[in-house]
Amino acid sequence: MKFPPRMRDLVLENLREIPDFPRKGVLFRDITPLLANGPAFKELITLMAEHYRGKIDAVAGLESRGFILAAPLAVELGIGMMTVRKGGKLPGPVIGVDYDLEYGSARMEIRPDSVPEGARVLILDDVLATGGTARAAMQLIDRSGGSVAEIAVLMELEELGGRKVIGDVPFQSLVTF
Image 1 (tube, rainbow, N blue to C red):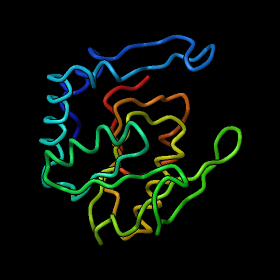
Image 2 (cartoon, rainbow, N blue to C red):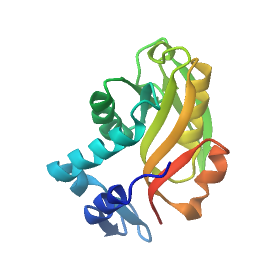
Image 3 (cartoon, rainbow, N blue to C red):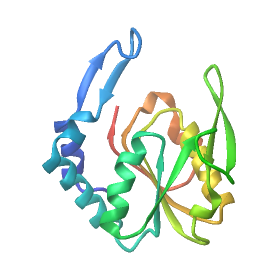
């Protein structure tokens, strides 16, 4: 089931575009105006909760803006939230997955004991770009005994091909650029 159109409107109405950030030639799409607009942020979380109620057992927020979205959604739904973090930021025991970046590699980690066995997990982040962090999160949830129900993001940067990297896992984006 697709997200209600109002959710897309909330993102677009509260999005700030910053040219040449963090470097020349990049158009950064900033969600901080959405987060700062209390009524709009609350409405977005309420609509997300209505959409996912009864369909998921836990929410996995990806570092770092995914945390900001996942925590209030989990609270609204009365379910657990887990953090999928960059390597070296969680106290052990952790499991990790290395993945390739354009120039080098990175690592994502999770505490496997934070994932309830058999839980239907929503992976939530602000942006899907190359798909590396989303794919790493999928592998970590699976290795921890959970099941990825869906990946959801506020924005997808289509030209970077992240959707191909995540494969056949159900995926939703509120806005595609």
